Length: 306
Ligand SMILES: Cc1cc2nc3c(=O)[nH]c(=O)nc-3n(C[C@H](O)[C@H](O)[C@H](O)COP(=O)(O)OP(=O)(O)OC[C@H]3O[C@@H](n4cnc5c(N)ncnc54)[C@H](O)[C@@H]3O)c2cc1C
Image: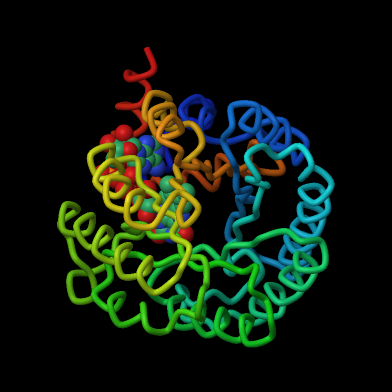
C-alpha cells in the first residue's frame, strides 16, 4: 500500500467516509434503506469486505449475505413505487484466493450460487458487482450459468472503460438486468480507455443497444449531464419501466434525484455498510490506495454539501 495512504489517520478516513457508509451493522444499513424508501428512493445493499484471509472470514461473509436476504425479504412491504431493496455482492468477498493475486477464486462461485439460491427462494433480486479485469470472464460465466439454471433475479454489471465490453454485450443472458458503469478499477491502457468522456459516451451507446435488446438498464453515474442525456433518450423511446438511475449513497445529488423523480424515473442508491468501523476504514483505505483521485471526489462533495 502507498505509504501516504497508510499514514492517513483512521479518524480522518472515518470522518470523510462517514457520509458514504451506512454504518457498522446490518441494522444501521436497514435504517438507511427505510429512510431512502421514505424519499421514494430504492436501494441496493452491499457488505464492505476487506481482503479475506481465512475460510472462516469468507464463510462469515456468506452467512451475512444470507441474513441480508432474509432482512430485505422481510422488509419488502415497506418498498415504495414497487422498488423493493436489492442486494449487490462481490465474488472476491468469499475467497482467500482472489484472481487479482494470481489465485483461482476457490469457493467464490459456490458462495454466489448459495446466496443466489436463497435470494431466489425469498424473491430478492441480486446483482453481481463487476470487479477488476481479472474477474470479468469468471463473473460473466457464472452469470450465464445462473441464468441457465433459472436465476433470472441475478443482474450483471458492465464497465464501459474496458475495450472488451462491446463484445461482452453479446454474452449477457437474454433479458438480464444490467448495470452500466464506467468502472472504478484503474486498468492499463492495453485493455481499457483512459478518457472518462469516451467511457461516458460508450455508456450511452451501450444503454441504447441494451434497451433495444430488451434488457432492463441500470444507468449508474453521478454525471448530471450524462444522466439527462440518457433519460432524454430512454424515457420517450422505451418508457420509465425499462430502466432506473443508480447512484452511490452519500454522493450529494438531491436536486438531480428530485428532477428525475418528477420526470417519472426510478432512482436507486448503492448502500454499502460494514460490520465494524475498523472494517469500513480498512476497505476505504484500500480503495484510496487503488484510486487516490477518490480523495478529491470526497473533498469536492464535502464542499458541495456545505
Ligand atoms: C450504483 C453504482 C454501482 C456501481 N457498481 C460498480 C461495479 O460493480 N464495478 C465498478 O467497477 N464500478 C462500479 N461503480 C463505480 C463506477 O464505475 C464509477 O467509478 C463511479 O460511479 C464514478 O463515475 P461517474 O460515472 O459517477 O463519473 P465521475 O466523472 O467519476 O464522477 C462524477 C462526479 O460524481 C461524484 N463521485 C463519483 N464517484 C464518487 C465517489 N466514489 N465518491 C464520491 N463522489 C463521487 C463526484 O462529484 C464526481 O465529480 C458503481 C457506481 C454506482 C453509482
